[in-house]
Image 1 (cartoon, rainbow, N blue to C red):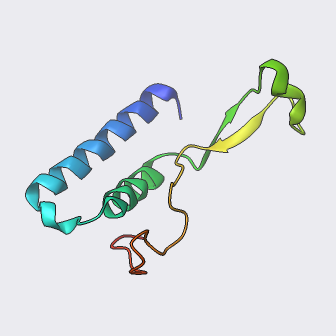
Image 2: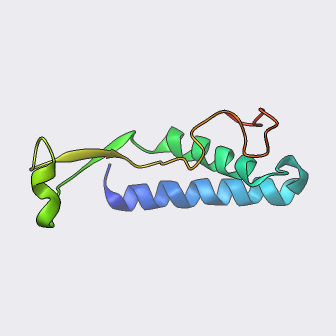
Image 3: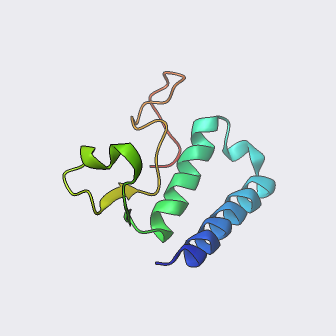
Length: 92
């Protein structure tokens, strides 16, 4: 997937999230709910990882100095338990 298509998919996901929010803002009571929803949208349209080339003084730190694979979608809260301690998330 090229970067132009990725930017397009990210934009579509953001528009989908904002549209849903304007239809019913009370669906998302916590920041974690919005993050989970956007994460789900992005995970469904973007490749799991992308290849990049390490550069600079840290290039020798990698097993393969010509290519590393990294996830595109990173999650701030990797646990299923929300920061408020309720233990539930609206989207998984």
